[in-house]
Image (cartoon, rainbow, N blue to C red; front, side, top):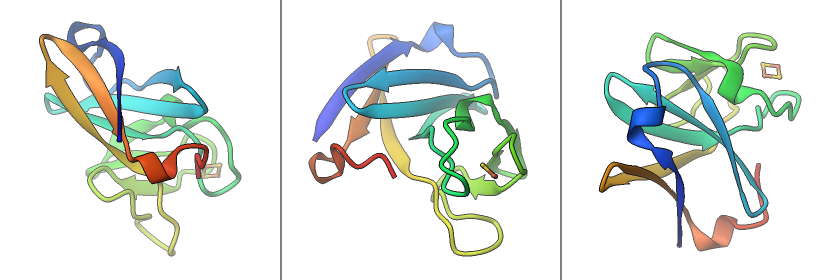
Length: 109
Ligand code: FES
């Protein structure tokens, strides 16, 4: 398990995505209703690195390219069988950490 510090909590704005890189990971982070959610930034539809630039609707993060919607808790697509990777987050001392399971290193999607 890798716990990666990405930013300070105060740097995140409600429902506005931010993009971070860590090792080989491209990560999209959103603050939604005060909670921090982290996803792979790579949309499973066309492998576009664009999730950070999406928006939040109906408890989903919406890819700005073609509008696919992924549940913010599970990453499951609202329709179809695709799934966006969801990472655990942790807040400590005002810092935001993203937790990436060891087995997922070097496998961004
Ligand atoms: S690339 Fe995300 S919905 Fe098409």
